[in-house]
Length: 138
Ligand code: AMP
Ligand code: ZN
Image 1 (cartoon, protein in one colour):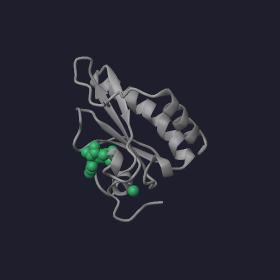
Image 2 (image 1 turned 135 degrees about the horizontal axis):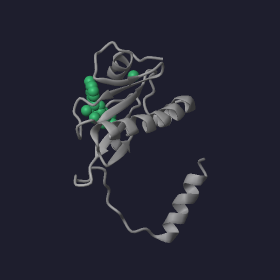
Image 3 (image 1 turned 120 degrees about the horizontal axis):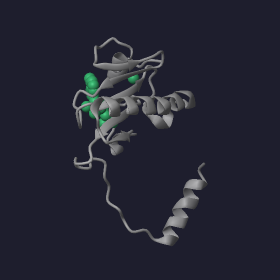
Image 4 (image 1 turned 45 degrees about the vertical axis):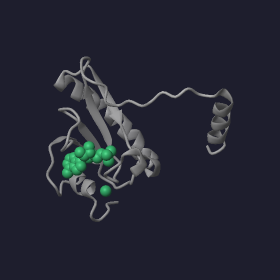
């Protein structure tokens, strides 16, 4: 299913041109227009899902396999030392295009780390409560 006025629906389905590095029946992978690093690639399903949380299991399992394929291709082509696989869900998490996509970002041993977060100390009692509360929702 496509969504009207969704830019990634249009790009994935070839209605808007892109620097495509890979295409099959269900996905297109393109270079990010405003890359974090040269070679920053986006894997975009041709069907519209707002994000990972609402996507079909079929698309997600293929997407992860494709992330491996594209990640290895990017690594070989760019000669980078590692790859960040980033996937944002919801505005609060930094998602700006609300059509599921996976970022493949080349990383270099001497480059700065761009995917980082603060590391809080954790309270064992609180951790146990949080774990139980999440487990209760699964
Ligand atoms: P996110 O913040 O996870 O939603 O990522 C959206 C990404 O899409 C950003 O890295 C943008 O630079 C990229 N982007 C937005 N519009 C385009 C476009 N027309 N072609 C390629 N990449 C795009
Ligand atoms: Zn879409």
